[in-house]
Image 1 (cartoon, one colour):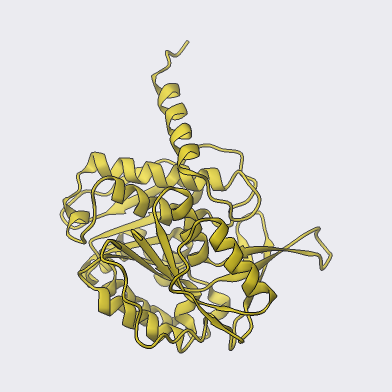
Image 2 (cartoon, rainbow, N blue to C red):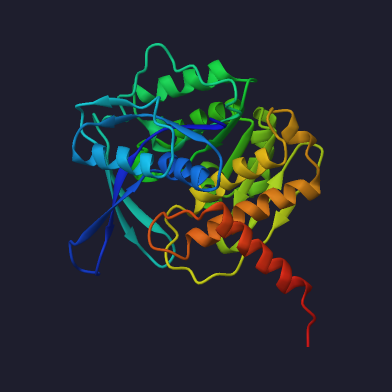
Length: 322
């Protein structure tokens, strides 16, 4: 197990034809999507959560196993599965969540899981941090692993679940302080720091303790900030977008997978990695996210698919122009 991810696992019901109540279910949840993406991208990955024994929980467990995710740390419960309903709009996706008393929200492992020595990256974030008692145990897990592994935080802000945004913003700064690598979408950044430029929020994250901060902007690419370095931006590959669900999760997975491929196994190495290597890491992540967008639902690509896409881009860049 090289990467471990903790948080919610749920069923996303996506809206069908406009004006109807027809929904199609998909396995989802930001942490689950990221775990599946890491596994498909070739890194041994484990998932830490609690799944229901109901029909949805059985489907989620089977999905993780079929995708090669290590499930040894998954607990089971008779509590219901978390459900989410998603309506697509031309600009973004709208969500309605049903989480109260769910299996993943009541995750309280005692004692905390002891991760294998070879686990080098540990991810947290998303709506699991809004539900107790799971939120407390997740932060306990991060504190127990601080300095031992590269801790990755993706807030995946869902305002419909946050009754007090000011209080949430204060809590978010504490989560930033627990992370070595922070990945935010531009929507996350605007919700966390309304009216402020992304580089100002990145500076706050770095001051809080993060070693690297990345803000993604969909088709606009992504930008990296590190202390003592100039901002580094990469473009997003041009693809025909079918669906954006899971794109950010796949980007986050691509970061950890590619960082491991570049030899990053300790938090300090995030700051030591050079610009050329960081550009390769972000390009890999952006390409993986773009390929996810070419399919319906969260459907991360395989490692070979990403490598093939990168080779095509390189060949096109080298081809003589008429």
